[in-house]
Structures are given as structure tokens and as C-alpha cells.
Length: 269
Image 1 (spheres, rainbow, N blue to C red):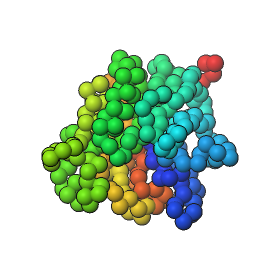
Image 2 (cartoon, rainbow, N blue to C red):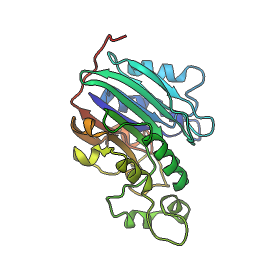
Image 3 (cartoon, helix red, strand yellow):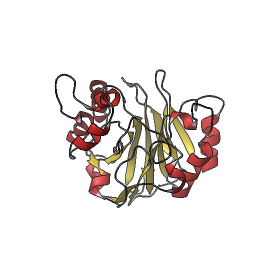
Image 4 (cartoon, one colour):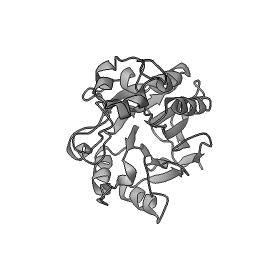
């Protein structure tokens, strides 16, 4: 099973109205994920856009709307089907979608989310809310743009490259020079494993910005994650950032993919 997370940037459209959806579809189709988590789906809840997008990929979509920020979705490729699906209700600026799929090793919970990009305290609250709804002794994946640097890396140089306007997003509040890594650290304490570190696939390490997709608020940062409970981490073969070709311009984020020793169990309903 291949899983993928991708922040497609403002619904796949630029401020001048130019659509990047064909390039985004090309990036995704080249990877052919079985499970796909998408973020920044501005406008995808109107006029059947999500359904058309999903049909172009041959996938089934499950949308979690946001009434304040931007919606997210989890998509499944046949023969995968949802045993249950719906939004995680909670204190999200954006949203979180929860889909349960049946696999050859039992049910797999997939959560796709987009944490608050602006305020570290709210980002931490969102991370805690999700962590409290995942059981570490079950198979579960958390994928998405977490907007948080990790607690294992020295981030001093990349923080220094940010303008003061954006640096504050990644620093603890008050008179301190400490990088705010609390959201990812909280998820790790809850038992989730960073598959990129656990099963590295080589290549690029940062997920934002891309070379041609904008992203002036980034400075070579890994903000997009695929995390799994220990039961899923044991099944991870590789995890890597997708780069090159259309991925350089389709969004300001690179997608992340992971390969798991799992397969769908179809026809259970």
C-alpha cells in the first residue's frame, strides 16, 4: 500500500486565477497512491469540484469541511473502501478527516489534517485533540501539513533565514529564542512514529518551499508528515519526499509518500 500527503496550496489556484489542478493531478497520478490526504482544498466543497478531481484520479473522496480555514480530504483508490468516514469535530482552524479502511492485517484508521500555521499554542491544542482520539495499540496513520518543525533537528539556520513576520510562527512566545516544536513532540509522546525518520527513502528532506511554487514564508522546512502508530511503523518499507518535474511548480509544498506492507481487503460491506 502506498500512502501520500499533499498540501496543494489554496485549492490549486493562484491569486491571479491560474489553475494548477492539472499539474497537481499529474503529480499524484505519477505516484498512484492507494490512500491520499489532501490539504488546502479551498472551494472543493462547491460545484462538485472534489468529485471531478477524484474521478480524474480514479479515487473516492471523503471531505472534512472547514468553516473558518480550508477543508481537507482523504481519498481511497479501489478496491479500498471506507468502513466509516467523517470529520473529527474539534478546535481546528482548518479541519481533520478520519477514515477507517479494512486491510489484510485488520482495520486501519487514517487521519488527514492541517494544523494551525499561525499560532503554536493553537497548533499544540489541535495536535493533542487528535492524539487523544488515536489508540497507539491499533493501526493508525496521521498524515498532513502539521506546520510544525520537529524536535530532533537543529533549526537555528532555517529560522534565521525567515523574516521576522514569519519567524514568530515557529518560536515559543515571550522573550525566548526557543523553536516551537511542541506539536510534533506531543504526537511523538502519544506514541506516533515519524515514518520519514523510521524508514527513510533518501532524497530531499524539506517539504516547503518548492523551487517554482512560491512559499516565501518557508526556508527549507519539513512541515508535512506521515506518522504511524508502532503497529504501522513496523510495516513501513520507505518514506520520502516527492520532488522533480511538476512537483516543483504544482504547489509550494512537496508531497510525501510512504510504502507500507499492507493491502486492502475489499468487499467487506
